[in-house]
Length: 301
Image (cartoon, rainbow, N blue to C red):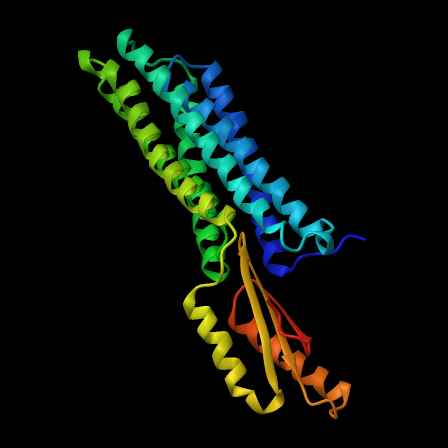
């Protein structure tokens, strides 16, 4: 049986799928422009766009696994899939940086003017996909504000870097064409590529910083722990003893288990109503949380 892991992940999967379509079209257009032109920055653009497309594909496959996978068997482990995918995104971004740097270095040693109809194709494409990538970055930012996620953080960084790359490559192409008669204009292409590579490297570092931290299981922040405590205190008259609280993060998911002892004379139905009310209240206050409230007469270690 396949079950969905929630509307939030489904929305992220849809946004990533749209990004995958846009990235595939972007890669195709940049390949056509590269074949129809002689430009080092267009080669860097094609390689960068291809690697970024692979990164988005990995993110989409991971989200499909989260949304449609058998998550009843992997409640704790599946959250790490987002973080692991984000690490792959960072690796591919750094690989793109290496390709751009090597290509730019070769062209600095043997500079030449850009030429070919592909330059004009690329110029139009940079404007179109610059707008698309900006919208994708803003959408990832909106979803990230609703529900923190290492994968969305990586996507926001990725699309922001792509939008910056579109703008910068457009400016470099325009400058190379307008300043064609200047001897030093042959260096615009490779230098622009190095600047784009630097921006991508900074973004990749941010992705690594966020993702590696989320790959490690950790307890909740003190603020969330205090929230749970306040919620239990506000219902102190509904239970006799608190036998333990377990909490942890796994990727973007928060798991909370609470063990309570109630009066043995109370009806099970009444106890269950209280447990459901407590669970619902905590899940509404803590984003991406799954709360389990259990009945126990033995203190939990």
